[in-house]
Image (tube, rainbow, N blue to C red; front, side, top):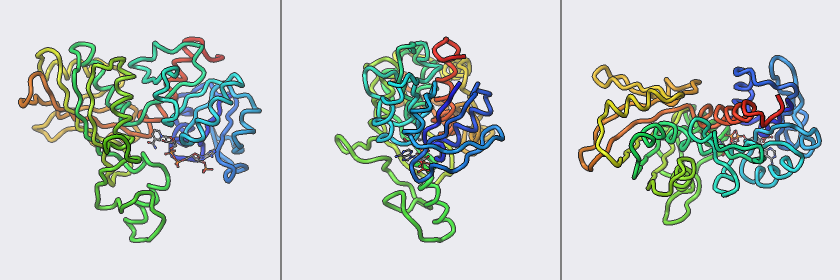
Amino acid sequence: MKVAVVGATGLVGSKMLQILEERQFPVTELIPVASEKSAGKTIVFRGKPYTVVTLEQAVALAPHVALFSAGGITSKAWAPKFAAAGCTVIDNSSAWRMDPEIPLIVPEVNGNTLTAQHKIIANPNCSTIQMVLALHPIHQKNPIHRIVVSTYQSVTGTGKAAVDQLENEIKGIEGPMAYAHPIFKNAIPQIDVFSDDDYTKEELKMMRETQKIMGSNQIQVTATTVRIPVMGGHSESVNISLEHPCTVADLRIWMSEMPGIVVIDDPSNQIYPMPLNAHERDEVFVGRVRIDRSFPNSFNLWIVSDNLRKGAATNAIQIAETLLKNGMLPA
Ligand SMILES: NC(=O)c1ccc[n+]([C@@H]2O[C@H](COP(=O)([O-])OP(=O)(O)OC[C@H]3O[C@@H](n4cnc5c(N)ncnc54)[C@H](OP(=O)(O)O)[C@@H]3O)[C@@H](O)[C@H]2O)c1
């Protein structure tokens, strides 16, 4: 299969190359794509050098599938051109996520809605993916009415420029700023730009994408998203209100039974999920499961995952694997 990775020189793109290799995705020809400034550079995949090409050159090479992670503007302009050339696009940006014609997929939750007609498929926001994966098995057993989430998000979620900013600040070096404020020794309560009612776009993404993936506009979601100086892995404090009474043990069992979730919850031994332990893992880790006695049928959870893997690259490649398994990509 001819596989294009658009944004191959970026954080998500290089993680995609690593995961395609790890999962032995049947790539017969790799087409690494980046901006004009990177065209001609060499990328090594499975020990073999490949030359980075431009978007125009990539379309002409007629890939079967293209994994896009080069920002919303590139996706908006180029995903339709790849699709028109017969390629299936799996897009990591926010460009297509809320388009009613475009499926927004976490394979374990709604992978069964994919069809061969879908030529552009959206990969959800990183914070949303880990939250819906953990909440889906609960919602199946006991419908969720309301979600209140606060995030603690890693700088790798912003891309290379933000990693450089944090590294420079740790070393005391002045350099270009990816954020409006220093991130080292700080917490910035702004991810993406401000939008309706003073929510940030990241917060609106979490609120809207959760309803779309879980297939219910009845689930009320509110979010506060915060950037912290962690080098990899997003954490979330999540409060849920359910339809019926149930126990903490019920929640732990339902989540443990879901593929891709690991419940780590032994507070008396100070054992709970943390970004350091989620690093380079594909699972979503859940702990600190507690009753919220301030409201009926409510609970608190702590959800952690590697944002570059399940939050981006792994989820996109799992979508491609689902298409392949269902005969929607050439074997
Ligand atoms: N980081 C995360 O956790 C995460 C999670 C989910 C989704 N995403 C999304 O994934 C995308 C990339 O994120 P990232 O963290 O990998 O960013 P990044 O490290 O800044 O990498 C950006 C990549 O896009 C390429 N690119 C930029 N402009 C381009 C253009 N006009 N034409 C072709 N290629 C272009 C860059 O190529 P050059 O090297 O040539 O500039 C680079 O390969 C964004 O849409 C982001 O929202 C990121």
